[in-house]
Amino acid sequence: QVQLVESGGGLVQPGGSLRLSCAASARASRIYPRRWYRQAPGNQRELVASITWTGTTVYAGSVKGRFTVSRDSAKTTLYLEMNMLKPEDTAVYYCNGWGGPTRQSEDYWGQGTQVTVSS
Image (cartoon, rainbow, N blue to C red; front, side, top):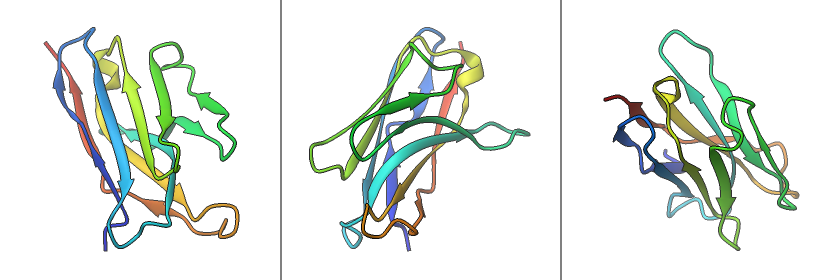
């Protein structure tokens, strides 16, 4: 049962841009996406960017200044604007979410979207 759905991945040349989106599936409208992770082949999954309930954003050092995390006013759609992409950004990008302040223990994941940076 898919709870979060990512979109926007693809193939892009170095220096290019992509915008990822993540939203709850139609049957899971009370899930709030808040973090982007990525996992490259042979590597562990790493946190790329997050946004708190109050809007504070945090970035991994490797993407700071190039990536921007944001969301819609309802907090139900999460975005990741990726600029100045590098080959080392190639990975499957996953969206992570929760049930909000009243359901903090809930944890949800998307199935991932592939981002490939290559010339």
